[in-house]
Length: 286
Image (cartoon, rainbow, N blue to C red; front, side):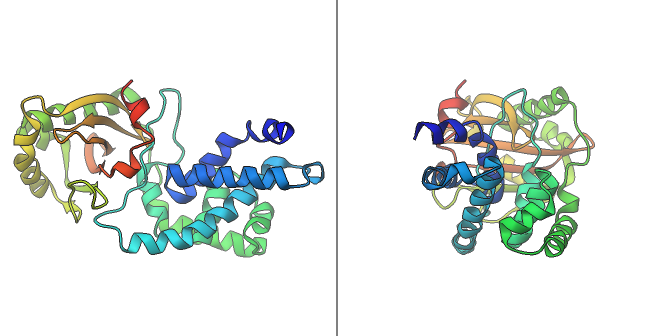
């Protein structure tokens, strides 16, 4: 067991990155990687020339199996579904932002695997072919189709970290103080709003579109926000986007991520489903 762990543990973080981007769930990604470790323990490790490539294949195949059942579960999900939020450390640079993770949901499992392995992790089509059991030409076509579907959701440019956090801080202040004039000045005209409570916490059952509709929503929420009932826990990048973690008046930790373009907030993503936040709570308070 010791030898299995010694060879597996250095690879584990990279395997979790693959699994999370495939599944959009931290807990499911960790379960898949643990399953891969059990298979690694049972394997003839001396016969494996490239342990990381071998384990990446195992993890990807396990994720493909998971995606079949996950798709069925999401058809009955209450309200908008968002990936579990990952709050990044200051020195981390996210290669898959939240809008792209959401766009990946529109792909078939095989398209998703081919795109992520090739475009995000730089894996060659020969290895991808062996992983998903298709020939390299078919894998190239899968990646091309996926790329066409998600092109608009790839990062367009890098915003300076400080500027993104300034907008996040201004958004938190304006929304929590009920300053609708300042809030309006931060938003794009065609702003979109998504909140994921999973039927377990209060949240919008449908997305909200347009600046006027969003201002109406925040005006109605102002009485819950004002008076210090909404407490900031920390600012940070959430799945590659500027945002913050807060404790709301109902005692719920939530994450807010802001998609910003040309200095304006064009989309807001809020996660309130407690099942998706349990992994954050110990770290979010620091």
